[in-house]
Image (cartoon, rainbow, N blue to C red):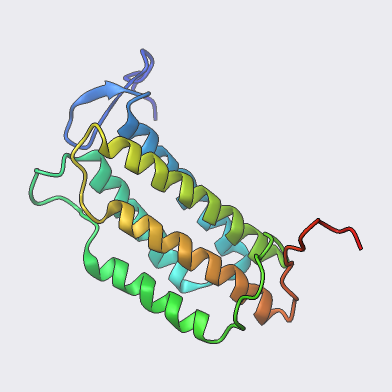
Length: 177
């Protein structure tokens, strides 16, 4: 269960290279792992097979991050993965009312969890972009995370709509009436 290999603050990338656990790549795929765990928690409430597909794709994305972009024959984020996110987003968004205000995170349990996942996804995207300043990354890693955060927002709205729950909307000046 334990190797003691990380006791001195280093870990191995998928390429076998040893790096500091503070390396931007490690931070990026750690954020992706956190996102994947949170989507698993959303799945407990939502029971949506798309989320299971996304969890598998996030494992592929983590593998893409942990192996240098120039190494062939490794798992990589592919355009078809981004396309599926866009298709899901378009399909769910088409059934939702137009946005006329900012949506506050919340509503149903599933929607609230999806909003938290969306914010973690945005952080993972920022961590990937930071890592890309020092490491050559697959060109679609950040694109995938950007689309996924869009989909998580739409799915949160859809979860509220499916439950007949009004979306919490931002009101200028807060709750003052």
